[in-house]
Amino acid sequence: MDEREIDLVELAKKLKKHIFSVLCIAIIFATLSYAASIFIIKPKYEAVTTMIINNTDGEIDKQYENVNIDQINANRALVSTYSEIVKSKGIADKVINKLKLDMDFGDFSQKVSIEPVKDTQIISVKVVDTVPERCMDIANATSMVFKDSITKIMSVDNVKILDKANLPEEPSYPDIKKNISLGFMFGLLLGFVISLIKELSDTTFKTTDDIAEAFDIPVLGIVPDKSKGE
Image (tube, rainbow, N blue to C red; front, side, top):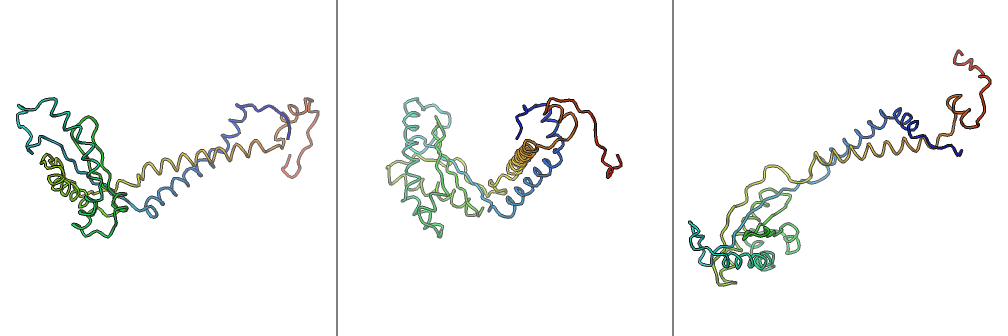
């Protein structure tokens, strides 16, 4: 291996010769990512329902006449407590029994996530499942079971369902466009790395200028290659 300094401009020119190969590798990986997203990765669907913690009498003041900041703060403080109750095994078991689901609490917990909306009185129940109908049913059943159970658990009726979950029409996972883009970018990177290694490991002389630069001597003559008609 010689100790010639790497000329970045010259190296860029050499890499430019491999641009077609690099693009081919990128397209191949993008195609593989697309195929994996369609035929290998199992699609998952997402359904969301939201609930609000309102006044303890179960009614939201229509004109907001009697709402005060202390009551709003008290309701917000309950959101974290209620979120833990929604995630509890007791609520999960009731939903599983109601829908006759073939799963245990561990499976249920992996599908259902509870997300309190920051600085609000709203709790979001998100369900991710491979079956869109079951995804919607679990989301709606969880909010309904929780609403009915909280009256007995906390002796209050202050939960109102804002939005019911709808049947998801398109899968939320995998993100096919994102996977194709990542596959293409990975292919580009891999192609350039392969080309770079190939160029840096090539110690052969291609031109008389390479010889003159390597040995710091002038080239006095060239032997013609008759096989090439020179």
